[in-house]
Amino acid sequence: MKYLIFFLALATQSALAKDRVISAGGTLTEIIYALEKQNSLVAVDQSSMYPQQATQLPQVGYYRDLAAEGVLSMRPTLLLALEGAGREQALKQIEATGVKVIHYKKPTSVNELLALIKHLGSDLDANLKAQNLITKIKKSLPTKAKTQTHNALFLLSANERGLVAAGQETVPNLLFNYAGITNIAATHKGFKAINSEVLAVSQPDFLVAPAHVVQSLGGKQAFCKQPTLRLLKAAQECQLLVMDSLLSLGMSPRIATAIQALHEYKTRL
Image (cartoon, rainbow, N blue to C red):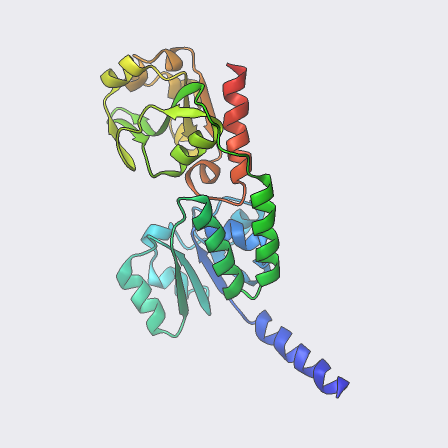
């Protein structure tokens, strides 16, 4: 009997080893690594920037603009797709070849993040590790600040075409709430254009921007010197916190780290 069990175990391991998974969404990829299921990954999308090992894997483009040819060239058996992944026609073509596609809601709250981890843990046969990760995140989260001590503005864009800021129902807004920071763009929902003259009246204490946006404009000093920011004292003094893009824009297992980064920056002002 024990020999039969041994060979069944080997067969199961062999079947799992044949899984060829593509992760389309940086949040999904980070969770997969946290669950220690990265050995099944054969490719990721361009938003999968953490951990560093993920950037060494083949890429299939940006998750919102997947092409069937690029995905299928990796011979996957399973595609994990974050909400917004597409194009829709490409996903249908991929499924038509027999590749299993699982869709996941993009988390915008802590509870949704924990639900996503549980869902992924179930789909990847990592239920125990998922529960351990959920427990770890719950323990690491600080309580929400009772008072807001600073004003800030999270910018997704700050070029000649104008400013795009994070409002309500965004990850940056949630992080601000935990860190005791008033979001001066909370007059709107989502990421929307905002008038720099209006901001000149509000005057944020500091600015926050994702690293890829800052780098695209030439670095921190170049970002602060953008003409669209000229009326803001925070830009004139370059009071800018540059955050890891996935950490600041996507709900991540590192959410406590993101909150701590904001808290530490504001206390230094």
